[in-house]
Amino acid sequence: MVLVHRIPAGCTFDSHPLGEEAYVAVLPKGHPLLSDGAALRLEDLASEGWIRFRRTSLLDDYLTRLLANTGLTPYTVARASQISTAVRLVTQGLGVTVVPASAIPEGFEELACPLLPSLTEPVLVGVRRDPGLAETAMLDHLHEQNWRGTGLLCQPATV
Image (cartoon, rainbow, N blue to C red; front, side, top):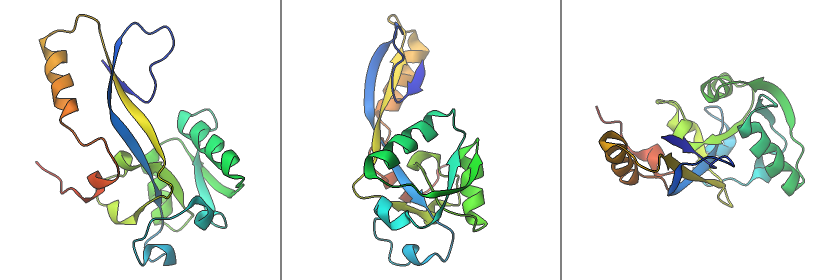
């Protein structure tokens, strides 16, 4: 079983769409763009220093294409290999970043702003053609989850 944005070519798993992963901007606490909680456009972040990801990562590839399509060339102030590291660099005031909403580390949700237009990627689960009971139960559980929008940022943690 794999949870991905795209099933790789040649993979023999059955693909099950779960929804879409929303991307959000993450800004340092006290940033003026955080004050009203409104959704942001990428253009609103163009003059900010950006914390990006390793050049070989799928996330940086997605952001590179996205920025190229919008004609933006923001200044990269740092690169991180982990989303949690990028968010923590934002909290230190180094810059801003754009990440999947579900990857915001617990306790940092208030630093996330939705984007307009909404940036999303499909969330797919790949399962063997003849899944076992555990895989089937996990697939059922995954179908019950919130895979749409940024609503998961507002959900309280459950233990």
